[in-house]
Amino acid sequence: MSRLDINIRRLMVQRACLDLMARRVDAIPGPVFELGLGNGRTYDHLRERLPGREIFVFDREVAAHPDCIPDEAHCILGDLRETLPRAIARFEGKVALIHADIGSANPARDARLAAAVADSLPALLAPGGLVAADRDVAFPGAEPLPLPDGYAPGLYFLYRNGAARAAA
Amino acid sequence: MSRLDSFIRRLEAQRACLDHAITLVRDVPGVIFELGLGQARTYDHLRALAPEREVFVFDRQVDVPDAWRPDAGHLILGDIAATLPRAGVRFAGRVCLVHSDIGTGDATLNARIADFLATALPPLLAPGAVVVSDQPLAPAGTAPLDLPADVKPGRYSLYRRA
Image 1 (spheres, rainbow over the protein chains, first blue to last red):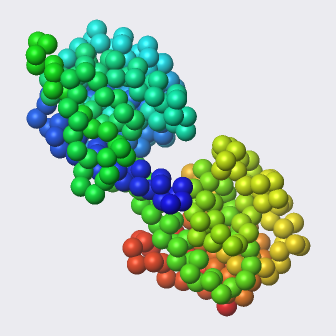
Image 2 (cartoon, chains in turn purple, brown):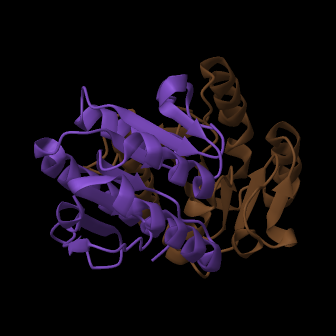
Image 3 (cartoon, rainbow over the protein chains, first blue to last red):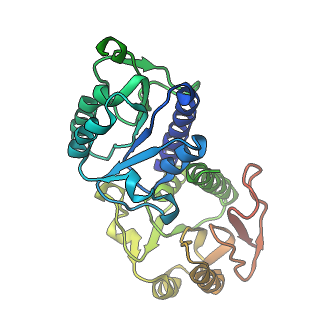
C-alpha cells in the first residue's frame, strides 16, 4: 500500500466513524468536542452532519482553512494536557461526543498524549457519551464499540461512556 | 459535501488517474516527472506503481520527513519556471509520465502555471507519454483522454502525446 492508499483508507475510516457516531449521538444532548482542528476537514464534516450542535475545537494553534475556523468562543487554544482538564469545570458530565484526531508520525508522543486525553474523558463525557479517536484513548468505564462494517479493528477507536451513570 | 468529503474525492480521483496513466505508458520507455511533492503521497504511489522507473520530483521546497524525501539525485528544487526548461536539456523526449499537482487556491496563479506548463512540457514528452494534472493544461501536441469512469469530469485532467 502506498502512502496515497494509506491516506485514502485513513480518511475513509475516519469519515465512516464520524458518520456512525453522528447518528448515534442524536439521542444524547450536549456539545461536541473536536480535539485537533488541523486543517478543519473533520470539523467541517461534523458541523455538516450535526447542524445546530455546539462544537468546541481544541488545538495548540489555528492553521485551518479560513472557512473552517470556529468563532473565538468555540476555539480553545493551548496544550490539550492543560486545556482539557481545565474544561472539566465548565463541561463536567455534559459532552455528548468527543473526536480526538491527535496522531502524528511519532508513536511514543502519540501514546503519551492519548493517555493524557484519556485521563480527562470520564469527567467530561455525558452518560452514554461517545468518543471517536485516531489513537487508543481507552478510559475507565469505556465500552469499546465496533468500527463500521468493512474496517479492521485498530484503524480507528470508538467508545461509549458506560460508567458515568454509576458515578452520578 | 464537507471538506472531508471533497478531500477524499480528490485523493481518489488522483489515485484512479495515476493508476490508469501507468497502464497507458506500460510500453513507453522513459522517466516520470512529479511536479509538486506536497506530502509525498502521490510520489510514493508512483514509485509503488512503477518501481522500475526513475521518478524526478520538482518543487520549490520540500517539507516532509527524510524517509519520504526523494534522494538528492531525484529532487530538483526551485521555481519550475527555471528548473523545468533546464531539465529539458537532459530529458528532451524522454519523459513517459508527468503528474502535475501544483494547483493553489489562487485561480490567477493556477492559470499562469497552466499556461507555462502547456508550452514547457511538450518538448519533454516521449511519444505516447501521458500528462496527469490537477488543472486543465492542454499541452501542445497532446490530446485529452477520457477520465477513469469513477472520476467526475473536471476534477482531474489527462492528456496523451501522439
